[in-house]
Length: 333
Length: 237
Image (cartoon, rainbow over all chains, first blue to last red; front, side):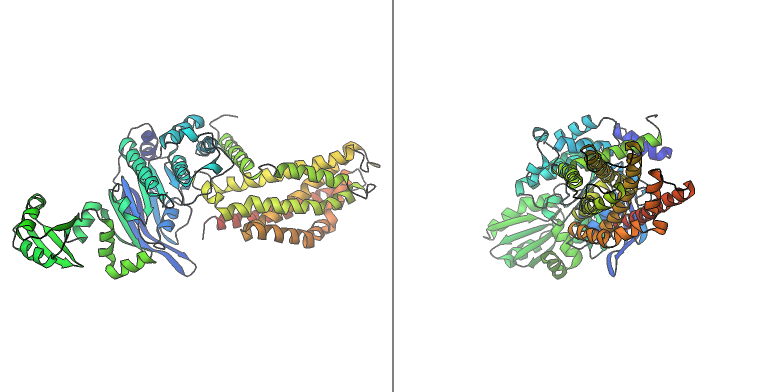
């Protein structure tokens, strides 16, 4: 074991982040074929720490990429390194510092939640399995159900249990494959709040694969867009929005053309367009725009129906990346 | 054994995996049914005066039913349901999962069948010609090898099909149709040679040794192929 790896991984578990590296996952020319189907095609990727969204429609290659990252699937070409270790050749080493939640994982329903987590702690080689299991179950808010059989758990409880088994042993990175699928809106919000809290308070990084974007944009710092086995684009949310969305606000009013005309001459407005009944505005100075918009609307007798800020709108970024029609088809599919 | 040693950590890992497998797969009443039915099978044998070798052959057909079903559950159903994928998300090597699953089911079946044999002997099911000690040695070793053979074939079929029900049916058919002839009519009828040697008959140690090697080589070869296939299947290609 190299000294660097030891310092990066073992000391981290005691709260000493002594060797903070820039990227936690690096993929170089990763291709994966399943027979004639190319699931991933020459994927190059650098994932920073934080909450990272892995975004794409069904069949984009997200789960294949995750399976390669955790060493379940061997890439046909290329390599993936996680915290500097080859994910296939040094699988065990990688899995000691990451936790995984698979979509619809078959947890042993005959066991109680705490018993199952104790087994997970033992398999992970933790020194005090009972203590670790207890900590994990409390952290996800399932302490009250610790002695209940998993068979009696609801879908939301099952996802929390999945999160508990992933975070047991304080991993540096937790990979979640469709964590909010099958959850009701309240369950989704609760789970995402929990993820956000663990990232902020404990410094655990999350890689979250999903095709439900609005909920992710609330907590993600960085996004990777995938489509048909390619990485379309990756970057921080702010960067991506800045790069791909050439407007900052969408405004709905009864007469969009008249509002566009009124805004056109203002010096704090860079660009105005009308599209699908909405006025899309790219501004120089957000504060001045926000202060003046109601005044302009009142002057021209244009009641404002809705104003939407386009920042951090992942869905629109994805649409812009694919082109409206393609993205629409992809999401309907 | 030192706690820091490699062997200790391997043993601890196998112990944990076997316990988890036991609690997950051998839930009530699978274990109880296996033990009770094997005992009843032996006791209800209508040919009580059979020799122990013949009795073992008779038991073969009951054993293959249990072995096929249990190994289909242990391997094929686990692959089908994704239990093994879940296990592989933890820092555990494929070889430990394979070993733990095989060992646990093999040991439980061996214990069940051997104890049923003992029970039938104790309850007077045809113990006539041989000494107890000799009989137990002969039956213990032969039963071990027979079960090892059945389990290895069932493991291979389970992994190859990766479908619980299909694996059970194919294993039963394969062991029924081809299993007995392959095992009992192996080169020089190794099982009979070995059984006779262990029963105190006039068989040379060289012949017995060759028979033992033959009877070990067949299942170990099948198991090696099964393991390679397991690794291939677990690449989720």
